[in-house]
Length: 329
Image (cartoon, rainbow, N blue to C red):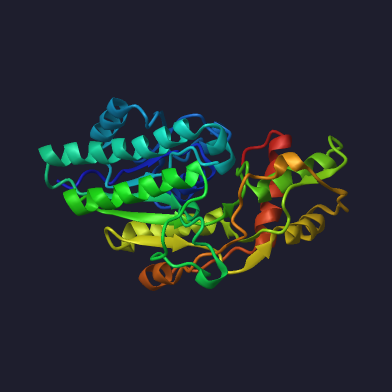
């Protein structure tokens, strides 16, 4: 028995998980999509009708095992995490606990199920991060490939290395099919606490009359930026076509200096922004350039980036307008 045709997602009430549930619902009935969540970062109403929502804390090993046993999904997307580098400086132990132990609990639940039913053979897609590369993101290594040394620069990056290597270990030692997805800077509607969403939110506040100045941190860093819907496309393709045990970068191709976001936002909003540097927005360390080589992903799945940053920013601003009016997204 290979399990049901259900899909099981951790972290569905995050930006990526919500868009994943939405994309899956275009392919299958909502009652076959199990969307688990804990400490949501989105409006749970955005999941209505798109999946079966189920509260679940991945740090609770028994709850994870019980949910997997109950649903026996054929595909697992493990997205749940403490996903903010800035928060990881403030809460390093909590970040490691959620991200590393949460991953252990998912794989242990699958392993125990397989002990009782060796035919159960789900594909596990694990959301890892470009933050794993850290100090390897130097000019001579860019765009960075999957073989580069993992030298994270903050506790979040360390926790993602842990997730990544645990997934590999469970495939190598126990034959649990999985793919590890090193996700580079990704944004879109429902995103919070990244530079693009912060900038869009600040512009929306100015447009709404709630603020006057446009606060910024370091504008010199450079990032390849991917729309969340392009990332979701990669996750779906890898669940179907990814090589078990392998790791794949998902990165945009064009690199933007963060300062370049400002004229894009001004164009979308029709505002002329009064930019003010805020020392509180500067990080203890920040990779100067982040861009990945996605050629392995493209060769294996045919994935292509389809959304421009201008379209992404426009859709993010429109989402905030909808929410302000109390409309569903």
